[in-house]
Amino acid sequence: MEIELKYGVPDGTAAEEIWANELFKEFEEPDSREELHLHSKYFDTADRSLARNDIAYRVREEGGNYVAALKWKGHSEDGLHVREEINVPADNDSADPEVFRESKVGSQVMELIEDKQLDCFLETTVCRRQFRIDTGKGIFEISIDSGEITAGCGSCPIEEVEVELFSGETEELVSIGNLLQKKYNLIPENESKYARGIRLIKEGK
Image 1 (spheres, rainbow, N blue to C red):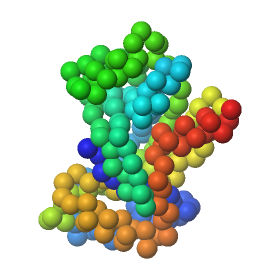
Image 2 (cartoon, rainbow, N blue to C red):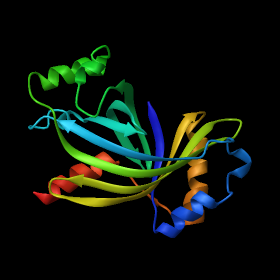
Image 3 (cartoon, helix red, strand yellow):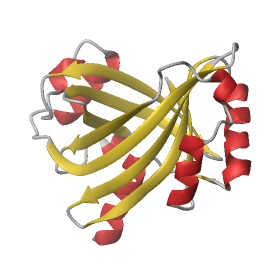
């Protein structure tokens, strides 16, 4: 299960201040800071068999490595996103649902797809800066994302901060998020990048 907070960043200055700020310095894990370039492709059938069943199929390139993911049963409130998730290594950025066959949700995906073709209908390109904090009660990863969501009908920007729960309690995750939100006037974001892409497609029709 994936549990994380998402916030919209009002401007680039705020993003730089979050990255440079020492708000969590005493809890920051040594050598955990890194910058990544992420390119994600989202796949579905022409009739959107997966989207209609609240399943997102993503293949993401992370520094030359590929990770395939399925996300489902998601809900969000006040920027807090909770959803089921499975990740497996992939050989490339093409769709290969066979990699999920051993899982229950993978079998469901295979049944939904049947013999239909999977096509990339949505992409995201993100520059991510991230670091981890360990409070002694929980471990969390703070990511600052800047990039773009693109679909055949257009594009929209990505400027957001994510705080993901690795271990510990959701209550502490929310407390950490509240600190960031109040200090930098962040805006709770209830739409995932995938959901924003779907909305972009619908608005473009």
